[in-house]
Length: 300
Image (cartoon, rainbow, N blue to C red; front, side):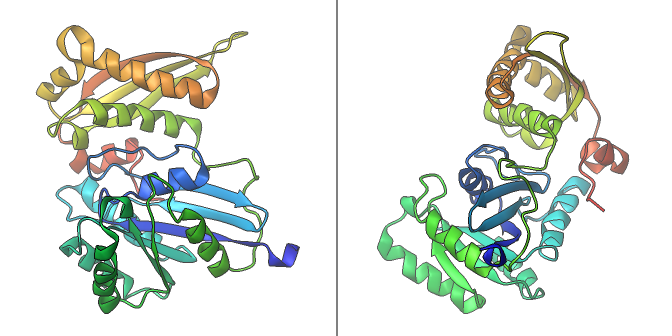
């Protein structure tokens, strides 16, 4: 059996908000990438690990490829494009309900330059009539020679077992890179910061989401107690945004903290004391030093 064990790295790419994080979280069985109805939620390559007796798949959930409007945006797109060169297989996710857009055509242009096999994964099939699927798939097939085409619903899990079977069949024979019970290689501090950012995305409107970064200043286990102290700073770009984030008499910040703490306690299996602060770093998305400080520089 050992020589039949398959393993490898699989990139999830696509336009913003097509369900890449939802799919990876579903496949690994745990939330490790934040999800939101706002585009460009994912800002780092988040690695999710799926392990079973036949093999191990390491998923890279990449930022949505979009037209950048800041240095941060340029970094996000570059991160996603670089992932194409690092993996054994690419899953190109598209939204069944949206049809082909200019963003999809831009991604396909980039796919033409790589030798990596590409699966077309048509997501959100639960939101369209089955008769509309085949014409949409035909449109994509005319633009690129996909190795496989798999319609799925990441939210409901429809056809995801077929997707896993096809991925494992495509991957080369290889070792088990991570322990069987490990679902990500990101440290707890990264996941905790992302959970806080997710709650900001849930509770704020258009002015706020893309201008927020979260830095974990301190995270430590309290001696002889099942309690973790976490001190985090939410950075934004303008004083007016700081006021919105804090809310009337601190109401919005308290709600962000409450929701984030509840998820952290489930994730870490410990009580959490969460101390949140909001600070202004003007135009941080265009400052290379701050992008590095906030952890958005491309990995070397």
